Length: 161
Image (cartoon, rainbow, N blue to C red; front, side, top):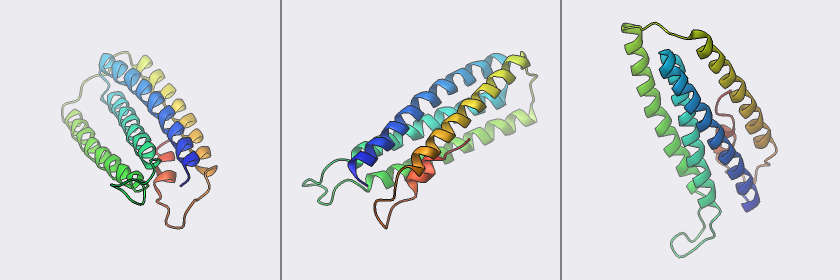
């Protein structure tokens, strides 16, 4: 992938990081105040998406480095490694959310301020949909650069609606 395409991907990942973390903060705070484990889980998932975007952004920045004495053919494979790290992080976090949800299923608590929780959930869904469309368009506007291209670019751009 050329350096300009990596830079564009980095900009998308950077914006995704900021938006996802901000949405996650609001969802977790409102989830805690309303005692909604679903909203807390969605907020944690938004944080996770932000962390994944940060990992991808870091991988894309490193992938732009020129070949040197340590890596004679360049750092392009850092992008692939960052996708493995991101996938592992999401799997572990998914397990934690699954456990917490199961605990809430066994010992349910009543949600308070349900109207506020629902409004925040709907707003977060709308923001996630806009972010999904933005990432999808950015991925479609990035032409393949090599025959053995990793699917990470399209995968990370279409993380979730």
